[in-house]
Structures are given as C-alpha cells and as structure tokens.
Image 1 (cartoon, one colour):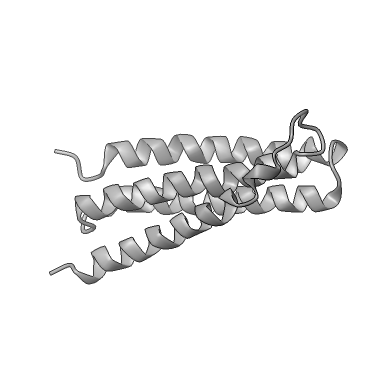
Image 2 (cartoon, rainbow, N blue to C red; image 1 turned 135 degrees about the vertical axis):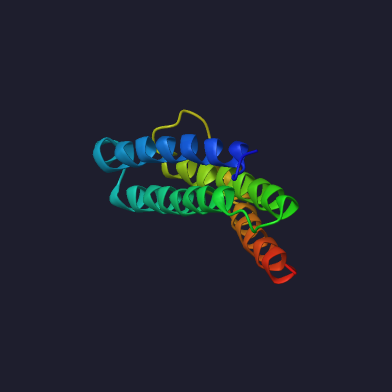
Length: 130
C-alpha cells in the first residue's frame, strides 16, 4: 500500500520538469524572437504552471486529503495549466507563429477560473475532513 497518490506525484514530477524546460526556453531563447512584453507574458504562464505543479506534488503526497478531493483538484489544475499557461505561451509567441492565435484570448481566463475552482475544491475537501 502506497502512502501517496502515484498518478498525481508522477504527473506533477513530469510537468515540473517540462515547466523548467519551458522556463529555460523563455529565459534564454525567447528574448531573441519576441519583444519584452511577450517574454513577460510567457514568464507569467511559466510561473503559474510551476506553482500548480508544486501544489500537485504536495497534494499527491498528502495522505490526509481525501482521494476524491485529490482527483478533482488534479483535474482542475491540469486543465487550468493547459488552458491558462498553454494559451499564454501561444499568445506570447503570436509574433512568430504562422497562424492567428487571437481566438485563445478568452481561453486564458477559463484556465484561471479552473485554478480558482481547484483551490476552492481543495479548501472544501480539507474543511470537510472529520
């Protein structure tokens, strides 16, 4: 019997490694391709992705958090990363992407909302512990 949620911990570990690679690209390669505002926007996506990857890692190891809560928070955070950070990455790269990504503008706040709902679901799960 494991004392942690293997699926969440492994996913968080892989996503954290990917986040570091994306961040390194943003810090070292992106400045030559886009303007400073786009780099700052890109860094926001990296920062939020890293926060939520680390939160998932902690949640995966936290035995007192009910499994149902872990699963829902995992889902909200993963989709939040894809929608929020993913759309920010593409929007920051719009100067060099050969097609329009302006349709992604409304997707970013949906990702932010998913992060908020994930945190609220975590709070509810912890509050309802007996």
